[in-house]
Image (cartoon, rainbow, N blue to C red; front, side, top):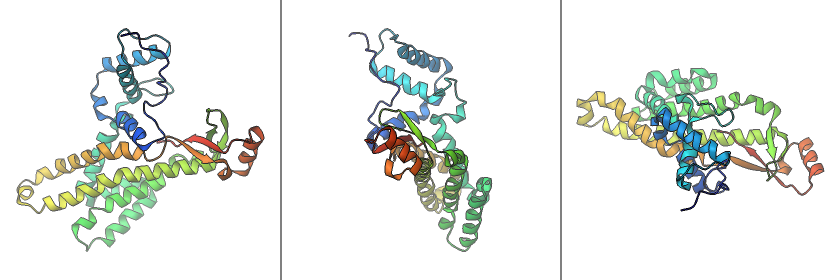
Length: 288
């Protein structure tokens, strides 16, 4: 077997990002929680492989599969711009275990934590409190969905607030080759909308399926005799849902999304037509 060629583009994902399947495979690799179990030595080894390859040095005996594995391990632990190691709970591979714990506790103790979790935003609190009062006299199962409604409301408020600067000055838009053409608020709005939809989509399976299952199980003698099993079982069900929901919902929209020039702001549209009248579609990073 010959030495690995240097023309493999590890700056981009391994799979075709123009298809849902390709994006899903990419995010399954990015959010793989098993990467959290890797030791510091293993992370540094992957870092060395990636950095050496980018510098034109191929690690002896390295295969293409090993190169891609090292790339995804590196991406899961190191900041893409600074190259510094990201704190454990801030990594993409921590998405599932972190959200599993938070969501599982919300669903288990929904009467107390459902509104408390939402206290960060007034709108979400209003949603949680309003729904809680409306469902007070309804079956228990209906009340279990209050945290989901509150989380959906929080995403609709928090994500635009966190990215409010983008709504003021816009985000970079480029041509197909990646050349920057300007900044667009319209593209920012579209990107934020896509992220909100993805985040709500992530929450649906984890906050809709476990309540139905737990409502049935809690009526059985098995859990009635072992009430302490309720919390770990709920968290486990949430984790199972999130393992699939997180990457699949991240893959709903291309990371490098597009928007037609005719939908951009008049000033930017005129600027692009002046630079290159043949450009009809521009691209932007939707964020996560």
